[in-house]
Amino acid sequence: MWPLPLVLLLLDPASAGVFGDKTMRGDWRPDVASELVLPRGRWVLDLTAATRASTEVRGAFGIPAPYDDAVFRTSTFTIGVETGLSDRTTLYLRAPWVDHHLTNGLGANIRTTALGDAHSGVRFQPWVGRAHALAFGVDLKSPSGLEWPANTRGGDAHTEGFLTGTGTTNVSVATLGRVRAGESFAFDGRVAYTHKFASVVGYVVEIGGFGDGWLKPGDEFRGDLAVTEQLDDHVSVRLSGTARYVGSYLVGVSGPGVTKLELYWLGSEEPYTYDDGTVGTIETDPSGWFVDAAAHVTVTPSKHVVLSADASASMLGADGRFFTHLGLEEFSPAPGLTLGASGAVRW
Image (cartoon, rainbow, N blue to C red; front, top):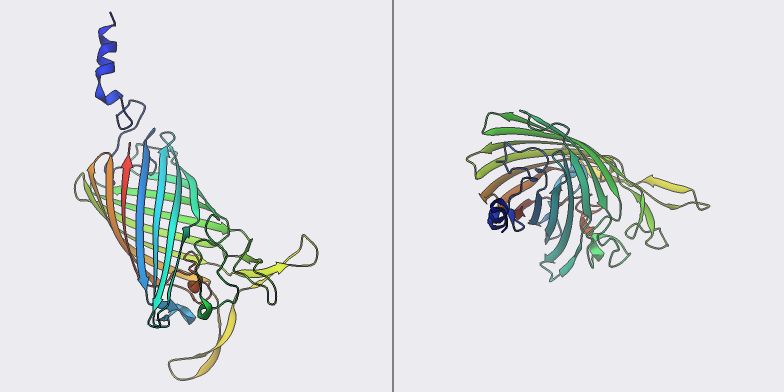
C-alpha cells in the first residue's frame, strides 16, 4: 500500500498541470505591489495589438503638415514571452508583426505586411521584498524586419511599399526604479541609453549606384516616468510620459579598401519662411527630441489572465520626411493617436 501522504499528493490538483501552483514558484501580486521582475518560475505569454491612422507628417522643426491627402495606418501585432528565471532575473522576447497601409483620394492603396524587428533582453533586480525597487536591464534589438524597399528611386512620390524593420542592431542599457506610496500608488522611472550600430541597409542608395549603403542611426538617451493607481486588487490605471533625444544620423558607402568607411551627416539645408514673412535657410535632419504621453488601464480577472487597453500620442518629434514615407517607425513615428489592447496568460 502506498503511503497516505503520497496518495494525497497525487490527488492534489494544485500539483498537476501547467497552471497549477508549485512551491518553487513565486506569488503574483497586484501591479503596485509587484516587483520589477517576474516571480521565480513564472511565465507570461502576451499578445498585443496597436493601431494608428495618421494624416500628417512632421516637417521642418517637427511641425506636422498634411501628408498629401493620404491616410497612413500603421498596425502592429506583437507576441511576447517572459520568464522569471530566478527571484531576481527575468528574460524576455518580443516579436512584432507590422502592417502599413496607405490610401489617398487619388485611389492609392498600398500595403505591406511583414515581420518587424524583434527585441530580447534581461532584467535584474538585486534586492526584492523591499518598500521600493531598483532594477537594471539590457535589451538587444535584432534586424529581423523587412528592410529592402520596393524600389530605389526614393521619395514619397514613388512609394510602392513600406519597410517593417530598420536593418540595424541596437543595444540598450537601462536603470529602472519604483517608489511605492502606500498600497494604492506607485511611481516608476526609467533611464536608458541605446547604442545603434552602423549597418548596410537596402534603403540607403548611392547616387548612381545600388541600394546597399551604410546607415549609422543616432544613439538615443531616453527617460520614462509613470504613476500607477491600484483601484482594487483587479484594476489599475497608469499615466506615463516618455522623452528621448536621438543624435545625428550618418550615411555613406564603403571607401577605398575593405576596412575604410566614409560616413556623412544625413541632413539638408532648405529655405524656410518664418511667421514674420522673412525667408532664411535652415538645417533639418531626423534627429532631435521626441515626447510621448500615454494612458493605460489594466484588468486582472484572475491570477492567470491579464487584460489591458491603452492610448498614446506623440506630443513632440523631429523632421519625419527622411523616414516616415518608408514606414520606419523607430526613426520617424508619424503623428497621431495610437490605440492598443493586449491580453496575457501567465502561469
